[in-house]
Image (cartoon, rainbow, N blue to C red; front, side, top):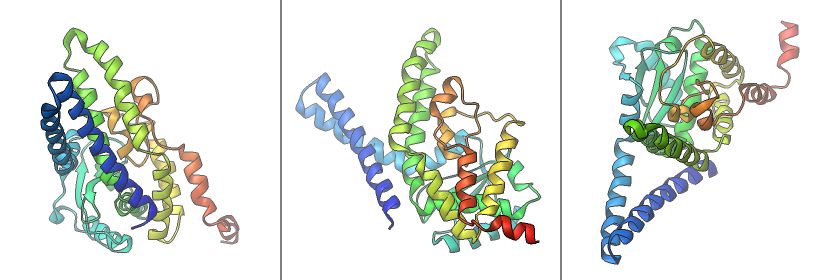
Length: 278
């Protein structure tokens, strides 16, 4: 297990300990040390339950449906081939019916993960770019980013949704819980995870240019096609599909696409000379 993967696992355990401590403090505030222990145990069960169901809950939240192998054998074969290169188990494949070309990954580890692709991405006439985006999501699985970000995003999205059932208090609740949810994501999810996944994806595909081209295409597409989802899900996608203003702006966690493309091109510094020669 690499350093990044180990650090993600450590942070996942820290997140669980935060839940246990918060539940224990609530129990102590209500009663005594005995009730604090009871609440701490409840917090542990809640955290483990979140770990088990978080990926399915998030996929349901964004309207993804599982894609049977019989419906798109070529895509499943591509995912399986890239998963072998990445050194992870083949993830379950989901499709998101609406939205611009986008991909995301969730899961509990290298042998229990899922990737979701929008129908717009699957339909792209650029196989190398599709493979690169799949490799990027598999890199998140390999690095155990999914272990942490799946749980963090589910909790943050739940906080945002709770604020929306407040009736006349909705605006006040969102004013408080929105920043708390965004702070939780920024505390546990570093933008560097995207740069690390980009580099690993380039290794998996044996070239950085498919992903660089795909990132440019995705950035152009999200400006043209509306995407409706909870802004708290922003860290899951390959790029930020939301306008960086208002509530959505608080959750922005991706490095600028231009910086990511530049770093990818720098992995192959002689590409311009080869292009001119061709």
